[in-house]
Image 1 (cartoon, helix red, strand yellow):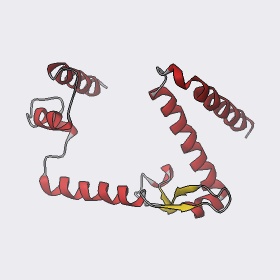
Image 2 (cartoon, rainbow, N blue to C red; image 1 turned 90 degrees about the vertical axis):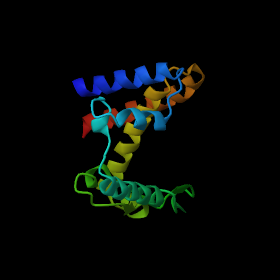
Image 3 (spheres, rainbow, N blue to C red; image 1 turned 30 degrees about the vertical axis):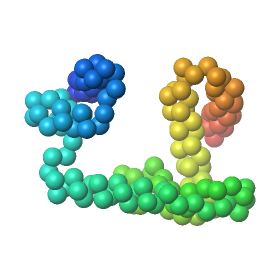
Image 4 (tube, one colour; image 1 turned 180 degrees about the vertical axis):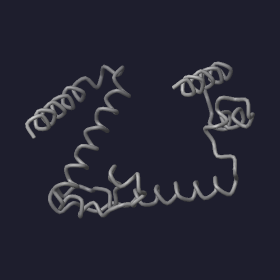
Length: 150
């Protein structure tokens, strides 16, 4: 945790140094210094970094495509990554298959709920969104009760 706080402090310092606007290139430039707390947050082996970047590009490609959900008629991602698949790097699944499997569907729902909580935290200072936050709170409360009952 100390490392995280050192990184946060360094990022704050850089932001202040640059008038409150911090660009990624500035962060990388500062991180090149092996003594910087930011240094270990980056992959400096160019071959490994290139491979990691291509994997990131592949993930971005997989989540770019949509399909129309037969049940709701709404567009949804064609592929998705379930939390349980990530430790083993199992990959991405067809969202229609996840929706058809009760356990996977529940996992996806719980992922959505976690995203809602994170989103609410990110934008809590925007009082204009209070009605949306209230709706999110109702959904979270509903599923919290269901979890306790299960």
